[in-house]
Image 1 (cartoon, rainbow, N blue to C red):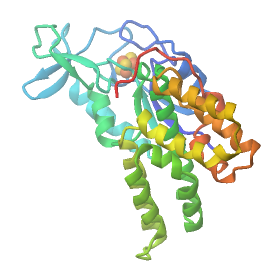
Image 2 (image 1 turned 120 degrees about the vertical axis):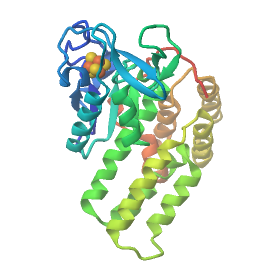
Image 3 (image 1 turned 180 degrees about the horizontal axis):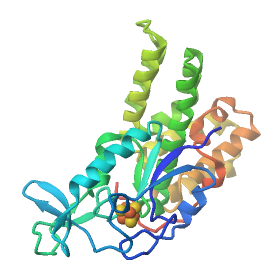
Length: 319
Ligand code: SF4
């Protein structure tokens, strides 16, 4: 299978291009290099600011956010906007984004801004100029910062979305209804864990009772597939799906195995274990008992096993 294509801020392990000539080391990004086709961008360098350069800030000027360099009294907002349009016109088949958090250019929601060109005091948080344009243009695509990806739940969702979109590219290439039907069937539980209503809507599109031409069906399905990911995949939704799978296989399990499942789920419920742990326990039982219905579900193998990593930043759930 091909690799997902991800646009990434260049200072995240690729080049010393930060304002002070620094680079951001990140173990997870390093690990991803074998599994992802990265396209690197650095808006501040690409618009002609050198390395090193004077510090830039996000300033709320009337109702608009601007990228402002206090040392030179220059506003680089339009330059970054032009650069973003250039980048977007060249990356038609991108699957997701990893952007540097807290950057006035690349940040996606945690960038401190001030309301005065003179005063550095922060008045709130918003997205950086480039990051905002990414979120606007690629609504519902997986977009994360390196900081958020240190949390295992955010990372699992990000990778799941990324690899699901990659698998869907195969359907867009083949343009066969039979492939679409198979895709829907094998992602049913995965979709259910994000959004049950959306999963049913995709099922209807796939059934194609209106007899629309294949191209239209595949385009419509893609749009709705992205919308499924716009709903937060909470641990409660995952517990519902996991319990459904457990119910499917429990008649083959011993009392001790069942108790083990309940124990693991109590840790998962508290946010002490990533989803990959109960997933792989059920998958192991499904293999032993040849439960094909479960084994065919991408819910159990959403992305390469090598990327399942239980290290975590320690930040708890915020949902
Ligand atoms: S945060 Fe963005 S603009 Fe700043 S150095 Fe990194 S890639 Fe360049």
